[in-house]
Image (cartoon, rainbow, N blue to C red; front, side, top):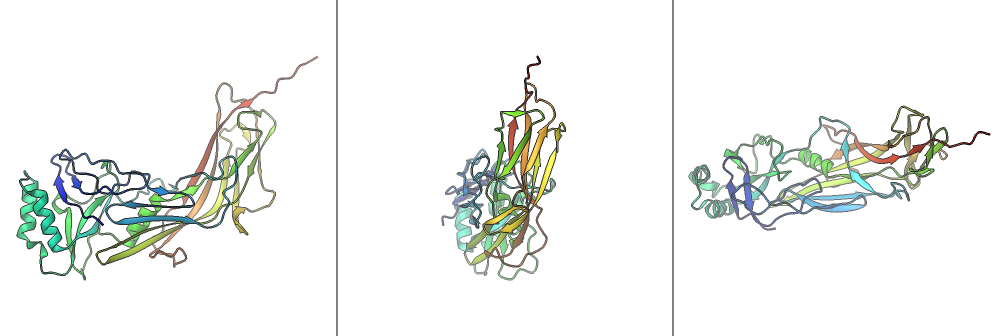
Length: 346
């Protein structure tokens, strides 16, 4: 795998711009190593293919993302078969902004600094001198780890300071840097890259033909199963992985207005022969809209709650680790039109 050939500290922005081969990222704009830009404006990365059935991509420099799901037909029609990025049920949860990854041997790091900072202005020149004065740890066992960013636009603050874009990590480090890559950080990156099937929902009558005081049948067509996403790294002798496993546990329907009976329906999900489905063969939600939507629409919504666990390996059936991850949500939304039934009085 190509190693970045240069790094320039963008004065003012305080963030690095990399030089090297661009890497792919997930659909969130996860950054690999975009081409160098002295102005501190990294290039955009290409989108990964983290599909609902299977997918792959990369994050940072050498983290690989792979997603799979078992069984489940995903339904047909309506929202069946489509996926959406997992949404955390905890509004305060955020994935890591940045982290350190293994990048260079001492000799590679010397070449990296020499080629990147030749003729550089301050503060980059002082940074290069600092590393040269340290001797790049040549002759020592270990690797230089470099900061990597989840987003190319740097909209979130990274706790790593520009004075330490790289850190030296020996084989047995007494106390790891808090931003050094770990299975826990990998699990959070995997969670953030996960795509989940949307609820396989079909409305009858069609969404643009609903009538006041006539029941609207919400049918759940098909079933769905676990989805797991593995984030892993295997580079220069450093290998680790984490797998998040999302298991569907409940389905909720929201009519989109208080002028409906019922306004919401909730069903638990149980494991069947072909995956998880509603807990009764005949279960369905019949919504009666009590008032017309007028010249507008009502925002009908169906969502699945997924219990998410993680394990520190590429095995989705490995033991669950702590701290836990928040539940995930996948949502299907449909604007519905509800009209009055016109009748003739004689």
